Length: 357
Length: 265
Image (cartoon, rainbow over all chains, first blue to last red; front, top):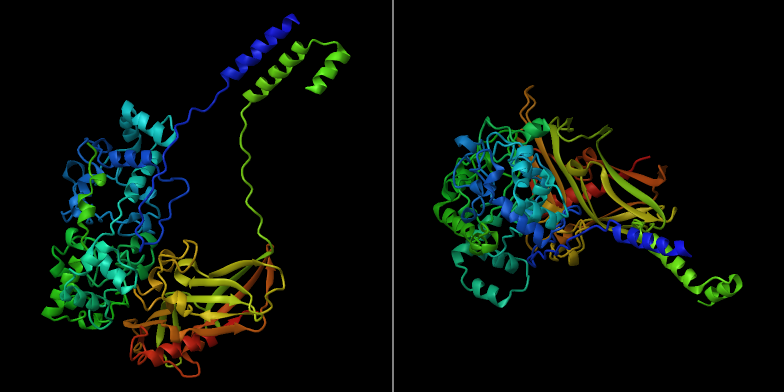
């Protein structure tokens, strides 16, 4: 009997000392997917949370990701340029220049490959590259993690977002990916035009915008879709204004940059690059993988009369044999007017995407 | 509690003693980490049936970007082969697969799979193309697992009301027999529109058992497409987007494609 009390005491101590996991309950992040967009597929190992998105946004603007603490992702992906870079080539640490124009970060949650040559299959994989790249942030991930880990605030935020007691590069990537998936652009005049073309009901706000669309803009949309005029839709199609493919669009007879071929080793991919979205195209100059065209006029001129046809040119550029679609001045003007309807002012001014205060 | 009292009486043990002992037992057991059992995924009923498509050029297996020769002597490299099929089922009207997309470049021979009782599909039929109702529906509204969702359909949808592209054949052709390689003649057949939906069928399917699955392999003979009921000459018939004026060629391509499908032994 006298040992019973001791037995009870020990049992209580065992109970009290059990290692309950201290967990912070994250808040699911509700992505606002536009009604005319498909659902976004979120990887099972990186669900969207309020805490993860907030951390990712902070990291996107964090210059300690670079060797000399001078460059963040946002240095080459500028919000007012629809998260593209207005410079032909981005500048890395110590002013080193890249070899391709930075792609605008729009609607990334629907992409099936990343980089101009598609070498990354997931957003999380893509994010891991710029930090150690000598042409970009030029800092090892070990050093990057050490810098972040030295910051008590980051340690707390990673713990809250991922229940992680240690910061790793994978978690950094996941956080930034969560933030990038929130960069959804779907509020342009074009979106109303798309809904009209697809018999999708318009809201009152849409109807108001619809009334402002000019006949020239509608004509430009027709040219864009027409097989015998702009013929743009084969690659720039649907609500996302792109298809997921790589294409050689006749920029060069002998491309200096092999593009997709450098990844696949397949000569059929010679000079092919990822087809970009045309959303916010008015804001994402310069154009093409190497930023060779400074203006939309130059782009339109390329497709109109500047195509360099080789056996690798995309067969969907059906007028390549004559240099292009041969638009006249009025058609070029209308096509440009249509392209300008793809601008989403809300996207580039959204404070939720800006540098946290 | 009744049992407790019986024990106390029988054993003349103090009730307090029994209660404390039981409490201790509960506390100790409760200190143990209880890992949740992982959920067991529900078992599908029936046997998995897999259907795949093997492009050929006559007797030769067809590989993208490899060179084949047409009856006219043209050398051709096929670069894209896609089929958007629907309502695949048996002659009794049982639909196994409501939509399936074959994309040779992206997913090689994979076409569709379904679970069913063995022997339920001694034959197969379906459509190359999508029924009118779904063909004009919002491609963003289909479930993410459906081939009809725009994320999966990708460039097999025209982006506006005309709907889905039912089939694609793209190729580069060297039409000049001069000993030099110049595949500069492009062939683009994009066939869609409601009126071009065509039926295909196999009265007898040779299912093979492999690794616990039922496997059927379809042969798509591109040479037979070109040499069908109305031969197609790549030099003069090389483009169709099913636009006005292209109706005849569109229908010819898709009809002869349906006729060029057969079950591999």
